[in-house]
Image (cartoon, rainbow, N blue to C red; front, side, top):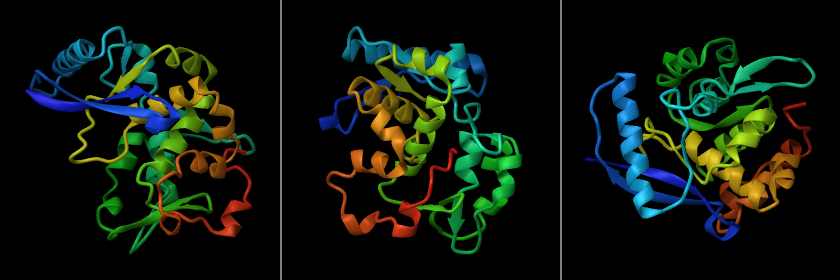
Length: 237
């Protein structure tokens, strides 16, 4: 048996996402077939808890084409001015700034898998903050930068966005909260929640607007952005 979170689309009062820890039968092994058995088991158990909810696996192991395309390894960001494209994963990894190095912009030119496995990400000391093309994002709230990055990337793909809003809950079979912090399934749930609450356009209008939607209960001195960064234009232009 194993336990994994299912991210259920929530209300503003829920912080836009409800995390339902679900115990299910785990099928060991690294093959796609074994992973998908575990996914089905997780979804079946969740549906016993929350009846009538449409659940989507967001990962390269998903049984649906939509779930695979929504993987951060595959979901692309395309800048408007330069026309450059890169994935959510490479954008995230290339924005990390450590005590002894970074950001490593060359990771944008690598595949998602290569970027995530780059040894510099493990050998440069503690993570200090994120630098996304000159805009500084603090480490707290913990998933704020990743969620913003993913939500903005998803908004660029109208066909995918129109499909994902039909789902009520999301999983990522590879995500283990004991080992990782950021999760593409949670980010997908946030996107749908913002859409359903009518706040998506506001969230997409600027990083500051996105941050403000998640700022309740967060200490001001833990995630303050500088005035200089606040005045910058959207990095997606």
